[in-house]
Image 1 (cartoon, rainbow, N blue to C red):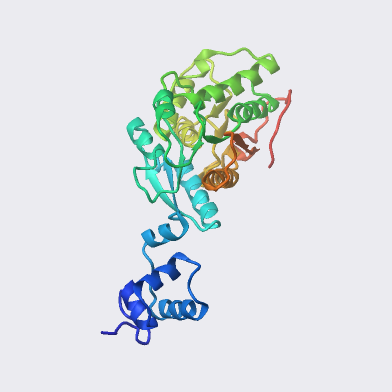
Image 2 (image 1 turned 180 degrees about the vertical axis):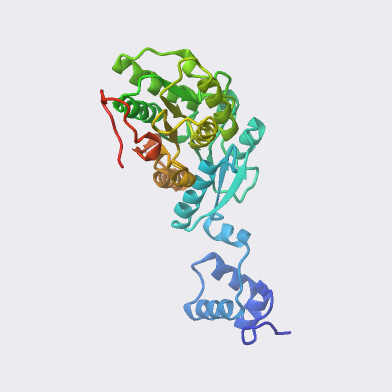
Length: 358
């Protein structure tokens, strides 16, 4: 029986309804849906008209039969509630949509077993490819994985496997942030983000950039200015800033390895009546949207999230193609230092190199 709201459409139309409307067999409808070549043009047009009239929507499995692909890729981050990952996920969705793909987003919670499950394609035959930002996944377990779907890695952890890897140059970015503070005349530059317990790939790379800048400027490293943290969250930033402000000889600048760490640090500075940037300059990392609206607005390293997303999606689509590139590649996206109010003050005549854009 016919019904619905579209001039005789069948509510929840099925393939047999399309066949009846077009006066053909179900197999013929299936051939049209799959794009089979051996369907007479008048018949194909009649079936397509019936599909439009009934608003028939083939199941994903039918699309899978037609193209060999579902049009679905998976994206997995260790902590989706983290603003950086949320902002990057939004860019990946946009980039994938431009190529007609839908993104299934997963939160691994940093669980290595969950990361391995996702790297293997979530044991779901409808997943065409995977974008994964691993946190604790073991190199040996990933290398031993029998790859059933194309995989592209995101983030700082490096794996010696046949998968493309998209990242930014963390060491260079950290060096530029530190050079900026040195150029302002700051000499007791602390870091919030030093990690000593695994996984610490991001921290190690940013510490390397920090060390490089200090060494080039002839400024000795003071380990008291690098209190260890367990994570890159606001609470850790606040705790570390409190420890730094308790020192007899306080820092005159703080480079935070995330904007969330910087947010916690700014809160403690406000509570302790330490003026930013006059008493202490603060620089973050990630360029989260909220950082523009902090008081003061936050100077921060801005990874090009749009470029990261486009590179990752393009690399995955290439791996999914009939003729993928043979060798895995490491793709480095751009970054820049965005200078805002939190480092605008100049306590002394600036010396040394600097970088940024106002």
